[in-house]
Image 1 (tube, rainbow, N blue to C red):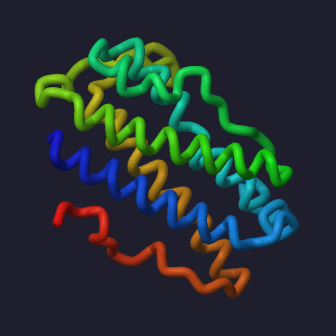
Image 2 (cartoon, rainbow, N blue to C red; image 1 turned 180 degrees about the vertical axis):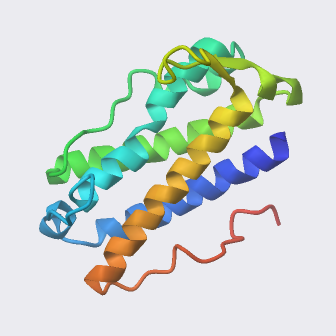
Image 3 (tube, one colour; image 1 turned 135 degrees about the horizontal axis):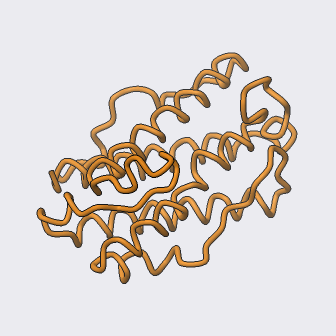
Length: 175
């Protein structure tokens, strides 16, 4: 399980960097324009997709004692929120995503195989269950990212912007 989740963390890190670089090439106005999606703009979608990782790290920090040192980099780190970001806020979001993705890779790399069944307390199921296994939470965060990068891909398609971050990528695999 560790090898699989570490591979997904590295894939997520590379995919997020690719998407952020592509969005960074757009004008501030293009990123902030209302695209009539749930998160309105590409900036809003990016805030949600890439800014949520420090929140998840907070759950992991308290649940997995081995996580504390690997996730130190995201302690107190907060992504900007909103559907319209200034240039400085956009830069901050990119920094948060980069730091958080590396912390996730470091966290998973430092775990023992037995850690993946450790319970992580969650509050969003109304107490049923009150905790989920670490491997479930990590899997869901990967799926969350894939889902939102797909939304970004769709918006870019509608804008007529060429991109290729939806294809297979093996560049993150060990040589």
